[in-house]
Length: 280
Length: 280
Image (tube, rainbow over the protein chains, first blue to last red):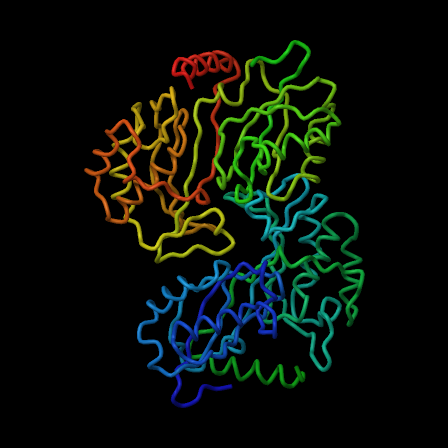
């Protein structure tokens, strides 16, 4: 995984409208963020398609504002990173944007150096519809939400625990995660005013975990379920079909947190051994 | 134009993503905001399609957040306006939303009672690209903008004058308008951070006027033209092909201003006689 001796590691910060992508990860015959990025980078740099590794492998239809990726290249390939970003943004499809390209500090790994990922799931309640210009990033409900109920229930899920009830099980994978934040806030001003933003921040996520967590909170917030139900289903170690998984369009990967440069390599070593111990 | 004796006038507040509409006004064989609204209202109310009059007849591709319209109906047609809004929002296409439906005060005319219309044209400069989720409402430039230059030039255009240089001429129509605001501001926070918002507010607009005004400011802000050029072309009474008309996607009708209820009828009388004196 470490860059070869003669290669420079680059950090790429990017965003996308996930609506027309089959998610981040390359798949034969599918339009993916990784696939588009790697092929356009190759064209702009006049190189072989570089292999990119990202911090959050978003599902089909999920958006990103602060996705982070790394790639390893011959140092001579990018003499002027700002110019490369401008050239990329001129040719990339209009649902994909590059914010920044910079040589990465020693030990940086977009996936394993990350301390946390922050996602936001956006909801419009029945009584406060969202403007149609935002319909691709906000899921409209057919009912209203009680945010106090949602936040009271959410508080019980924060911390280090087994999130198996919210995860699509993978053979040999662990579903133990540290949930750092789970809360619902109504946006007070701006173009998304009255939209309910559910923030979900954790050290890492397993598959469908964010959308199942928010789905469970929505069940509570709409009055269909109560906090006791959430505690009961959350205690189960396996996926519970009573927990609704919300549609992907409301979800955006907002930000990825990294430690100080001096901690990057140690954090990557820890995270890598945690994941491989779990056989993932 | 006044409602018939046995009819109730309603005010409808609405918004739309203009991308897939051929503008507001009904046209045979085209998908328009007016056409969609009138036919869905008829279905929801079980009535003949009502005729709607709006405050700002937006062009194809132009969005609206605060469009206002009126329609006249038998008072028994809408027993519960809030329920009608909910039913409408369930069936309307997803690029169209109704915010509110309320019986209009006496003398209200969505078009002629209006004191002003406020539009915002949104621009992304080359060095600060916009997130792809906002590409339908923000026009991306291939250069940066000097806002001080734009605002200095803009100040010279505010007031009562002939805007013929910025208007597509219509037979018998006047191009004299009162421009109340023209300024460019960089958004400081939120999802549209760094986007340049050009606010254009006037008592009324002639065709293409907003996009030509902002196009002229962009020519100044990019350094291609100077404030002296703007003064010269603005002084001409007819459309100047040197003034670029920006694409519609960056433009949104944000808000329509009306006087106090007691002034509505008088304002409508004044505006109607102004427009008919001009033969429009």
